Image (cartoon, rainbow, N blue to C red; front, side, top):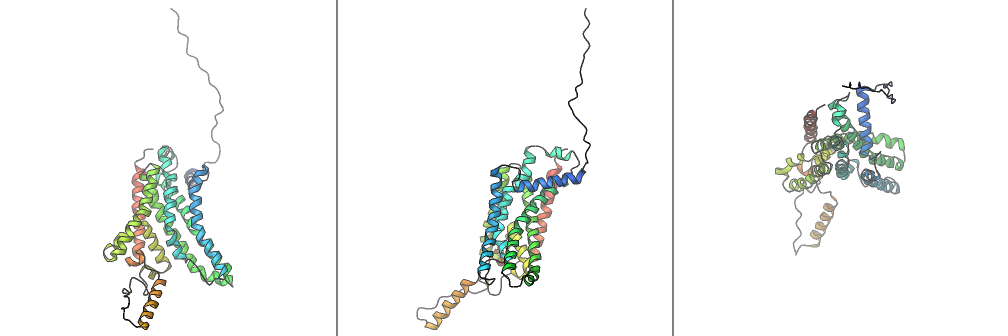
Length: 334
């Protein structure tokens, strides 16, 4: 009976080496994830089609500011199209579109490719991941929101006869603009990241963010305008209107209430009788022209909430979103 041959083996050196470089640790991991989130938000490092939505939305944000700079230069500072507060209210829907298209790129890909467990198995904590993703999106929204305002400030300075006086005069407005941009960016980034983290599929996450930030506002606004005394609480269910309320409060607390000269407070204008004299008809036409020049109140003015209510709603959204994100990522096993 033959004896079986002993098992033999060989060891091959294929060049594996230990890492001898500097270990960046937890802070380095958070910083790398944050930078990667900034690049993803603008489509950097991805295909050409991925760059179209952020670039298109950024151009749409900037075009009105460039138009105002041209008009201000032609009119030598005597005419403006937008105030800084009004610019936030006009372009806030673009923030919603940006969040809807770009937020799923930051969150859903990590869930679909199942790399979260790999992230959390090393120095990165679950709270670090959330902080990096929210920070990247908030920074992106802040940059996108501040760029047109910087263009507006530059146009005001170039059109002013004394640049230093114009800069000194605009300092309070600049501080309010920065504060408003920070509040809007933090609010929308927290809400958008939470929705994208809960809904794992990218198309469904985009649709849900659109519905909550934009479509809900379209339903809330007519209800509040029709019955502001009964329906005004619905305004706080829309993050978009909460952001508008915060920006209005930041620039001027009285702007969240109807001004004295407002459609909301003026009695209905009754047409003159058929046999009215020419003076009555002329007065009626003058009043109609005057009311035409008055900006009709929006849902913010109709609701008549003080600014502190919108600040409380903003804080509530952030706390709720932080709680949902904590519960969502706590379930992931490492």
